[in-house]
Amino acid sequence: MNTYDIAIIGAGPAGSIAAAELAQAGFKVVLVEQARCIGKQVQCAEFVPRIITRYASLGSLDIAQLIEGIQTWIQGEMIHILKAPGYTLHRSHWDKQLADTAVAAGAELQIGTRAVGWQNHSVLTLITGRAKQLIHCQWVLGCDGPGSIVSSWIGNPSQTASISLQYEMGLTKPLRHVAVHFDPRYFGGYAWVFPKGDRANVGIGIHCSYTDKLEQLLGIFCNDLINQQVLPDFTVYSRTAGRIPCGGLVESIGAGNILLAGDAAGCTHPVTGGGILNAVISGQLAANHIVRHFYNEPEKIAANYKTDIRKEFGSQLEYARHKAVVRDGRWMKAQEEFAALIRSSWVAFPEYYMR
Ligand SMILES: Cc1cc2nc3c(=O)[nH]c(=O)nc-3n(C[C@H](O)[C@H](O)[C@H](O)COP(=O)(O)OP(=O)(O)OC[C@H]3O[C@@H](n4cnc5c(N)ncnc54)[C@H](O)[C@@H]3O)c2cc1C
Image (tube, rainbow, N blue to C red; front, side, top):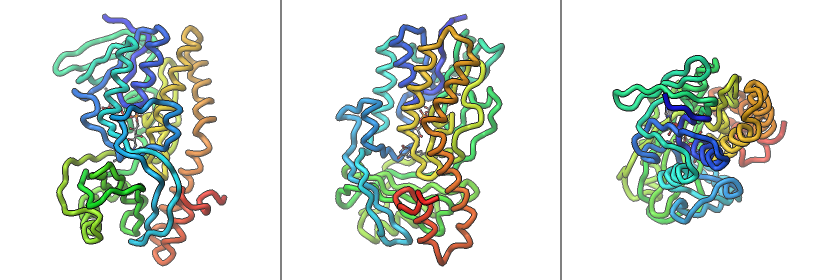
């Protein structure tokens, strides 16, 4: 049986960044990813705030374009522009770069391999194709996204999540802002246009009870954009879909010798759905805790990590979760005051921050 100091499940931003830090610190690390090709199945609209460069490097090939800010549209009318400099990324490239960096630092990468079981706090079961493999490890870091199996091993129920669908489409002219569109039909969420040069990620994320309406609503949204000459036609270059956690931090972020980071830990913002920056920060935090305290009692490390994660994100995510719950409760009743509801529940408006 192969033995590792740390097994990291999931080679998204949280997992690859943690793997690089741990391998650099001299630990024997295996990074396990179920996809056969990293970055091929990215589920993301790819907008990040500029501050991300404090935590992770972005090469010129990782950046699709610079973004000046966020436009907020309510029922077809653009009513606000927030200055919020950032980037849209080529995540397929960036995710691959991050995994390559981890490998260059000494981590072993196993792609096309799924983590399926955990026994006796030390033995991980992995499946590659039809082959089953048992590995021994001292620590497991669950960076396996919104449907995290690692999270279930420490007793967490599945996370509350919204559901999204996105097309990559052509633009009639370049755009400098990401645009977020609210409409009473987009229950508990919004539609978006995030430009990437001559193309854009055009998507919609809504409450999961409306899953069966997703495709139809996105179709209507795209047709509106064609009528407004934002999109030239209905050509879809690629499509992606996914769950976006919106319940805030999971109850147990670490227990025994398991820690969670990124979407698996519920670090995604419940109102915006943004999770890349928090995935990077939480991946680094988890790695730092293991590096500094590897030989200490696992329970102490898990407890300290939880405290730090709560300090970093707790109040921000809890506030957003509360705002989302209030918003959804009023959504159907507030049709005639829809704009006021959005003003009080969307991060771009000062009203959002009024308690
Ligand atoms: C449609 C959509 C649009 C979004 N847009 C934005 C945006 O514009 N900006 C933003 O900041 N955030 C956005 N997000 C959220 C963002 O994509 C996530 O927060 C971010 O990817 C989280 O990173 P992560 O490393 O935690 O997890 P992920 O990037 O989800 O990576 C998890 C990895 O774990 C792997 N995995 C899962 N289970 C197993 C297993 N059992 N064994 C092995 N591997 C496994 C998966 O294949 C995956 O590669 C969006 C999400 C969606 C769905």
